[in-house]
Image (cartoon, rainbow, N blue to C red):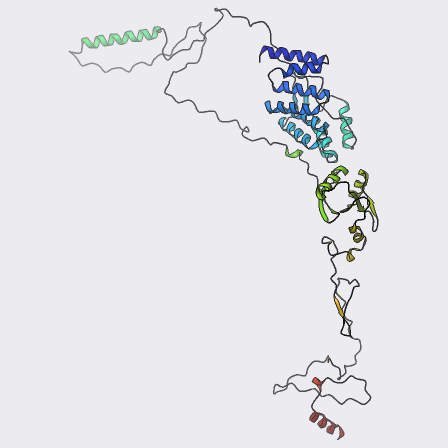
Length: 488
């Protein structure tokens, strides 16, 4: 880093300490940007209350150093101050992932007297989640390392009870300090103090006494063999002695021997350490909190569906209704009892409606009456056929036939249960033979395979029995024959 950059960085730190934020900003913006300098600019804007400018510089800090967890944390704080809870939750998750499983990061060695703790990140995330952040606050309470602030435990307890607490931030009165660089040049070393390492090759620089003696013996053997070669055969050659190990002088330190071999291939790369190839998740799975959705049927000019959560606010409900019907300022009513409707004007009204598990809302404008409310006040069996999602089935109207052979429509409500079976007859009197619908079993077949005709006696005079159908009357010859038998 250039000396000029460090000097301006130091001047900016002094100006900020004295309360001159504008001079500090001008000094920091005039040097080459680094991750720490962009963080310092963001902290100054946070102290001035300009959170939008602070978000831009914290973003530049994370682009220059993607492992700058404190920049992600402070950007989430700025989003939360701007009431942008969705972006703040994402930044808090990124800061947690940069902790890499630890409970804090100590920035003292990097020039900032501050420790970013997991408990504080979870504390702010629980505030952003609202009513659904109770479980996250419980995780913050289970952390082994908590801030030294004695009021942190009390604030965490209030947060779990649903009370309003103050957001946790990094110190707004501290900046990253520039690295210390001395103005004096480093001391020069004398030539006699410099020690150049000496390396031994495969052969010693000066022959040892043992090696000189071996060479002298070999020369004597060669000279003697040359003088006696003509008279006698040469004796067998003895095995050469092994080369003595190189010895270094006592003054030189013992260093390993290096062999120069340019034709040898380079050594293979070292295998990766176990566990380093596993990719870290972008956001911790344990921190993901999914809130159940509730489907609400809204009736205005037609019926449309929206989905909300249990922690939905009145402003969010109005936004969803405006987005669904493309109209704003609609009055919202719900069925509070069997025949009464109540308005939703405040947050407590919405909470009461969700508590009694309301699934239908009726919208109107300028006090106008909603036509769907009149149908909702009727019993479920008499509602119109457009209520396709009603729990009671829609009764189909069946025509009824009367004796006058005229069709009339029965508008009375009918039950969907099957009609009861008719009672069994209790009388033991046999049915009349003049009945139009005989209940007795037919006669069995005779030997010829013909079913005999039943014998029907003549109807007594003055009887009120209905006439016998033509299809059941016997022939006149059969009747005369039967009368003759009775007369005899």
